[in-house]
Image (tube, rainbow, N blue to C red; front, side):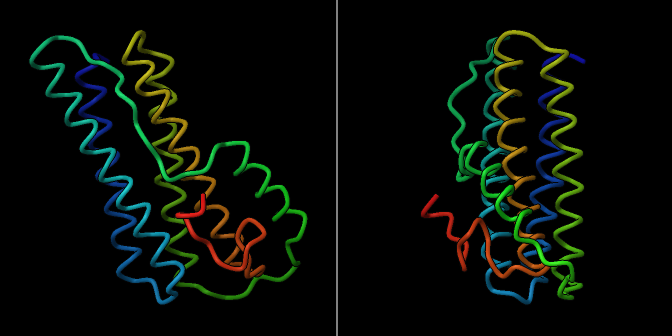
Length: 171
């Protein structure tokens, strides 16, 4: 796959993920769930904008720069530490929030699929293309962890990373 094809495919994945979060935000009945879906939908839109700018740069110059890509997602080690703590505290029974859980599981699936694509691009490409997709892979892995943490929260703990409420502004 060429770098241009990879960027175009990545844009398609990001649109799909963004739309999944936007739909989930519109359907969520839980205010906390809506907030998380909005943050993630906005972040995915930022990814689309970034990729479109890289595509334009590629088309104009035949090269790309792996410009900084920011995220609201905490560092991977922070997410993993929080997940480990959550796993240790999980109750045997799951509260039934079928609508939110269905949307979260759908979001988790598209994050996994998108992450798999980015992993493949990191393996296939080199140079700035590889660096750019490595950053996307890191961020999508963070999104996947966030969605999983929210699934864990909705499933019964009532806490997210040891906090009664989730607030990305504090991340």
